Structures are given as structure tokens and as C-alpha cells.
Image (cartoon, rainbow, N blue to C red; front, side, top):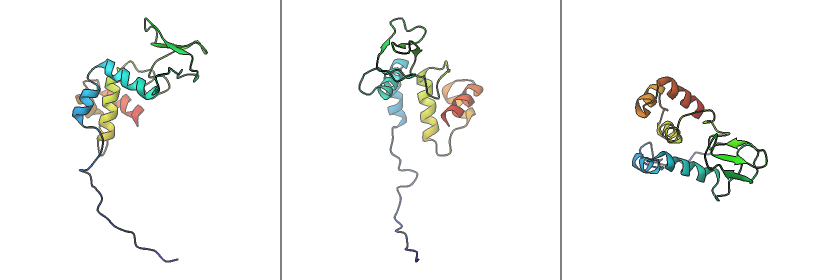
Length: 135
């Protein structure tokens, strides 16, 4: 078996990356409500609420939002946008999670918990917790 030479071309390199910019991210997640709407669109792109616990499409929004913003008529359980994700059991707002995910994924070598602590204004232990959940 003979080895064939690989075609070596110029790759775009580190400087050329596609994705959203920091300014686009700031516009996308300007408020907590923007973050909620974005996560809703990720979970339910067609707008039909689906229970994140049992998968039933017989779910509805709770008017008061307590104890959680959504409830399933099939399993009779409440759920939130964080249910079944790495963000579950966290009291942190979705906006902070979105920024932490963005900063971790756009950093070439990852981001340290100290850096996240300074950038997001959370305790270092909270930043460490978030990074471990994201990773």
C-alpha cells in the first residue's frame, strides 16, 4: 500500500473565524427577556411548547410564573428553560449563562474561572461551577 501525498492548502487560520461578534452578542442578550426568548426559540423553534421532562406537547405557560414558568398537563410537573440542561438547578439568570457559554466557546484555549469571575461579575466559585457545567 502506497501513501498518497496530502493536498496541502492554506487554511484560513486563527484570525478567520465565523460566528457572532461581541457586539452582536451584546445586542442579542441585552436583557434577560431577550435571553429567555432566544432559549425558547432554541427549545421550541416552531413555537409549540413541549415538556422538557416527558416530551409531551400538552404544556402551557403558567400565568404567575411560579414555581416555574411552564407546566405539563401530561406529567403534571413544572419545568423551566433550564430543565434537562447543564443550567438545571442554577439560580443564575439565562443572560449570564449565555455570556459564559459564548466566552468559553470563543476562547482558543478556554477561559479561566478567574477571568469569567471578572468578566461576568460573579463569585469565582460560581464561575468555576458554570465552566464545569459548560465543559
